[in-house]
Amino acid sequence: MSDSQAKFVSYIEENQKKLIDSLSEVVSIPSVSGDASYRQDVFKMGEWLKNKLSTLGAEVTAHDLGVQDLDGKEVPLPPVIVGSVGSDSSKKTVLVYGHYDVQPALKSDGWNTEPFKLHHDENTGCLFGRGSTDDKGPILGWLHTIEAHKELGLELPVNLKFCFEGMEESGSEGLDDFVVKNKDTLFAGVDAVCISDNYWLGTKKPCVTNGLRGIAYFKLSISGPARDLHSGVFGGMVHEPMTDLIKIMSSLVTPQGEITIPGINEQVAPLTDEERKIYDVMDFDIAFVDEATGSKTTVSDNKPDVLMARMRYPSLSLHGIEGAFAEAGSKTVIPRRVIGKFSIRLVPNMDPAKVIECVEKHVESEFAKLKSKNTMKLTPDHPGKPWLADPKHWNYEAAFKATEQVYGVRPDLTREGGSIPITLTFADALQKNVLLLPMGRSDDGAHSTNEKLDLSNYVKGTQLLGTYLYEIAKVTQ
Ligand SMILES: [Zn+2]
Image (cartoon, rainbow, N blue to C red; front, side, top):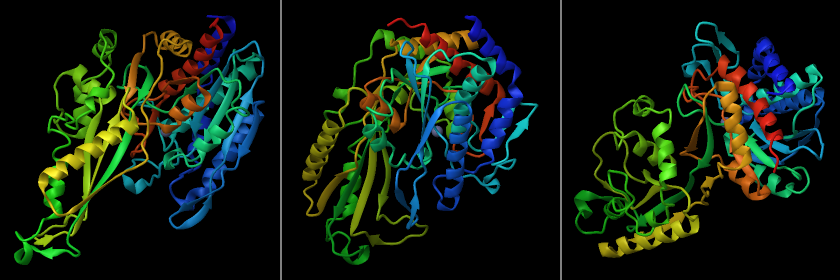
């Protein structure tokens, strides 16, 4: 460890109070992006970040993204805060992404303390508050890394660029276009990207994440009669849309979760021995799933199979039927039209266009078998591609080495079952390696009540972000 790096690590260790105070300051700004009545607070949070970054010596600009329609009202979109520290051409440039908006939270939702007032529970070492782990803690980790260097009179080992958005919890509206439009200006010269906005797989062992599943969402509509009918009068006389729909939906997937649409499983990248091994060593227990689902309903009892089902295989879920009678009681209606909703989580090497084509072909052939006089229509939503980064890239090597230094353990290499669309945007637009380097744990309750960040994750996580930059600086390529 270099002298500068050692000084940085001790500075963070010794200045925990500063870290807690700044988290307390930002948690108290309720920057909820999904509710128009909090919009001024999202702006306030953006302003706070902009000021903080410029106090720390960064060049920083706020970028207007226009307006959005929210609950029937036209409201201004919060700005993207873009900053940079350092422009030494002999150093690597790392782009850091984070989001400064949060999910809604009310004490009455079941919080033990006020959600927008940071509560430090000294017994458990937890810092409770909305945004503590998602994603204000990680953003502050980066800011404290810069601050530590400034206070110590040290230069950062790399050039840093920042992209902080205020709409992540509301679909990142406007950000994709912004990144694509500015790839050769604001984001020029970036060598690698780091996003700290996900979590450890469990609660004890750190991880780095190199994959996300994509999604293809479908609406399958079956219609026939011009109006809802009474089964006592028309039952048996007409083709019923619901009967057709259930038949087709049940032909998509088995109760064991196997997708039965021809041409889908064939697209999945084969499992290599090397990849198979990583699932054996992951810090994971099926009990985590049981706890999260509040049941004992996993398809398999085998740890690697459960992990692979989430991380590296596609899944098909049936979500609902619009137009179906869903109230209590026994209504004898025959619905005139029903719309089945289902989605497929996509993994490498599945191609969304090819997936849609297979689904279309399959439902058409299943519908033809029914010999029904009803009308069927399949509408796919705009799909999201899966993402997988090369874990042998120096960006990942730096994260592995940094984690070993800070936590004394080789981190797990994980993939997430869901999607963080901005990851793919950065990877595609900038054509650079993207790394997900989480700070918090799986039980932090992001999006839930009593969201928390363990103080140890905050402190060590900040040391990790800084150490990762030192490891990047050692890269010779
Ligand atoms: Zn987040």
